[in-house]
Image (cartoon, rainbow, N blue to C red; front, side, top):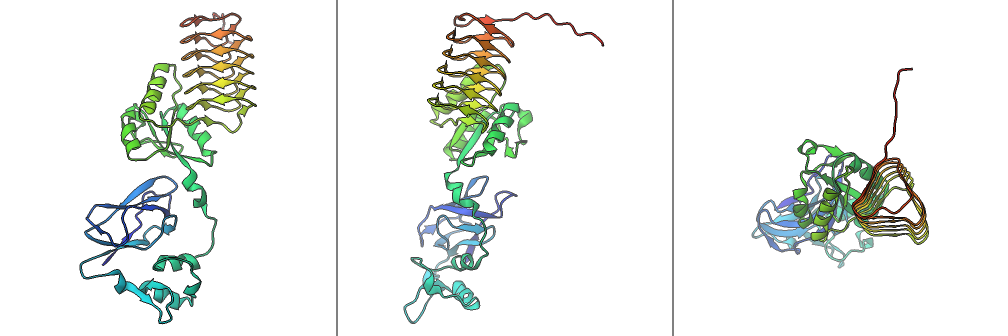
Length: 355
């Protein structure tokens, strides 16, 4: 007989929560077979059997266990669960011998424990452990977000997500080898975007967000399309300082930075990047894959079609249409419609001289 103990998966967590058992109590298992899934604040991981035998489960799903504590026993031929279980002469609860000794040492009334099945040592240890705030109460509801990108925009996305109690960042993917092995606000860069399918199949994430800040809208859309092809949900990542007024509608995968304003009835499609201090006024309509730099001002009833790119400080007068695939340079003031696949270029004369 040997104990299977909670492994340490990262340096930050001294405990883990049992998510679910993947084997039945008493089931025969082989060496290397996955027996359960556990969760820390950073990741969900599998625990495997170190050898062949039958499993005696010691904890229940949802229970928090310290690293190194036993979560199951591996019974060999001739050993049985019953050998390790005591039952009182009065028909009291059944418990393991370790639990029996622990109860006697701490003078515990085990009849007050409301649990079906065998009472384990872990049950009694939890009963006498000092009470502390349980940070795990919200973890099952947290969405695990994978950031596509590891550059400056990924840092902004990670910062926004750090303020969202319903989400946690599990990592980043980027095709630049120089980013591999680094971290983005504590989230590890896990490798190239080719890892996306594997991570999704291994259930390492619940959502993704595209966080690319350069003018390669084709790459932004490509990453988005890959997520959609795998049926990966795209998260809307919205800074807490952003203002979304009544009737605003968002698609998925939109990234809204600090102090973005969306007026009444504004509608955005998917995978749009809206930089800080941009105001999109009432009843504007944006398509998908639009990139908008800092400080842009869209008056009411403006339409912007798919894959258009705005520099910084662009002003658009009311009720105008910016076509698909347009490029609007920084500082432009748009006073008429811009057809599809056209550029608006501004020429500024500027002289820099010594003082």
